[in-house]
Length: 470
Image (tube, rainbow, N blue to C red):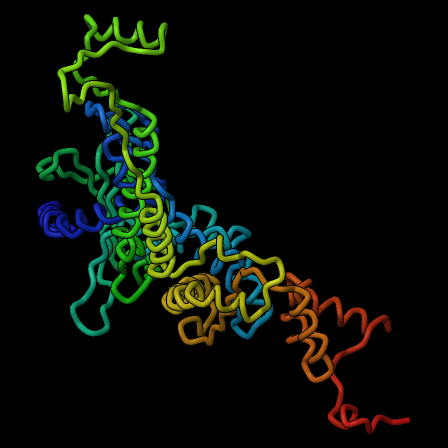
């Protein structure tokens, strides 16, 4: 791409990029417990008993509640603690895909869920390193600006990636602008806001002679040969909206009421004395006399006189505030589709009760999973193409997602025991609460059967009817 064309593209996508990044930055602030209540403290939760000049209302405590981080991490832990298992109907190929995804695939899936919850969409970029190995990584959402087609397919036409990079020669930061298509990547750099100094980043990529394969220099264009743009979006929902938009107002209400409550508790400890017709010389003399004699002198003005000492105190509407805090907290978890930890009040909840607690979280996680499935398929197909699988783009891919939830293990074990005689070994292994790797459990059971140390759960219907051979 030419410099002038790139400059126009940057200018035309800046407004959309800025709007997205402002929204993402707000979500990150709430995720890191820097709610709007702490803006005056530069994002720091702070207790300040004497933060205002008002003698009756001097407390200005600003402590934020971290409900957003709790709700986001709940879904990430519930949905992605155990990564989805991939099956392409070829055991050898399954192992190669699993090895390529790596041991930290679950951590990357967890981060993708967190990023998608905060930004509305998360991104994976893949490439081939110098050793020829397939690599992939998570790109911060605020670096990526996608360009889609306007038709119903909404095809990804190009990707703009912008980020800051330090120049070690002069110690200054400059902006790097990558423009990715299905054929190549072109890289530019700039420092000025209006891109007036936009130029090619000519030392970005090493270039080689096609015929000899020898290095001939450097340039700003990379031909990646993927046949598609090596960026995969992981949308959170249909409209790619971050979760915070659903309950930010409720969190702000909770913070305001809670901190107002704390301020009142601090302020009520400050008793203000109102002196009427005080007969002393000064307030200092008043304090000295009060401490020494436990009494003060006032001047009487006759019948109906109100001379004396009164106190100003603050009444705290405790019940009203407690009620409002409880209602707001409950609404936060309802609108955020999460689980209030305080709902687990018993140590022996039944399986049905636990499922009811997880119902809203399961609904949210199921929607996220449905949108992530297509993205995971894209990543797996990219790996299969790298492995030169002939039917990589058409091969059937089966994903199995496993939830991580609290369960009543005793009740689950009883269910498994009751249906063991009429259920396959695979189903038993999956349902066994003591088993973490059901595939390994099946293999162990098979090994035991071969050795003669175990038995299979599979029985005929005749056996179940009591018609076993004598």
